[in-house]
Length: 402
Ligand SMILES: [Zn+2]
Image (cartoon, rainbow, N blue to C red; front, side):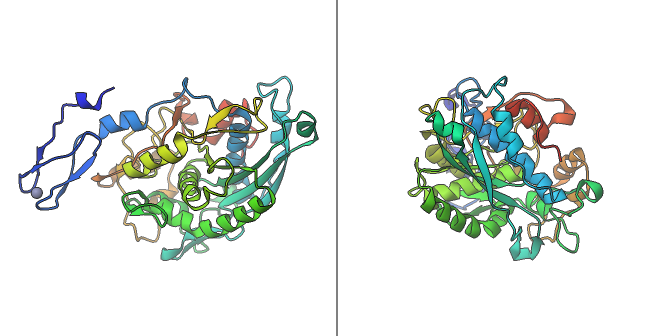
């Protein structure tokens, strides 16, 4: 699929001063060398076809690891909204089901290491959410795993997606400040692109996700270092659903830079679900080069010697947050990025999408999915973007409902 077939040609005249500007087919936004006006090159859709190419059918995913990832990414909601105990046992039992599709891999003993007790927030704006925003879970192979010579250690870092329900759906007010401002949707509707504190300047991340991740990143890194000192061969898996998936992508990239040399295998695995577009083109290319193209074995899987890509990004074909739809995550359509919240929070899923579409669009701020995009297919309206549906796909049934 040659980018060179595109109808757009370089050089193009600057829309401001009309002097010719040269750019390559790999450029989505060009800058005039004379007057420094930025403009869209017109190559965005062509670039998207390459960066966001569907890998389903060409890449295998690790069934046990991805099964745990979607299980935990779902379970964290109930922990935060209903004070539910984190229950990893029914998941391991399910993986152990000999009649099921998981037969052959190793089950483990899972232990909650950190329940995100310090909360998370947009601290610069003094928006603090006291409820669990992430979990760290240690899974060690059980007796059967050791008996089968397929022992393993995994550390999961799991981020929670956004909550905006109130009342019986969210009695603990997860996602809200004490004075009832919704932190999660303030993050979701804060666009713009900011540079990170770890990568080169051209690599940029959506501001709301970066800000929210920053409030958790220190504790996570300290905890991970502590665990790796005891379990130096552990595989590290970063996951989450929706906003939690966006945070997982940011975290995995940070850990790749910050701890790639201490994590066995060369860095973390990143297996997020229903991910919003998280970074600019430079971010997604860097993510692909450092994580997406790296393959590492996962002990505990049915074939412990088979290497798997360290980044696979699971999304639904017709989810407006993730893929084709022209929703706020493709181009910037954000609220005031310094605001104290957003009225988008108190709406249905469709209402939020429509709210996003009402915001003015900035065609020069462009977000992409990180490779490898694994398109699970098209789903009916009531299943779009649902973590329950993702459990159906990757576990065969819904284990965590709240
Ligand atoms: Zn110009």
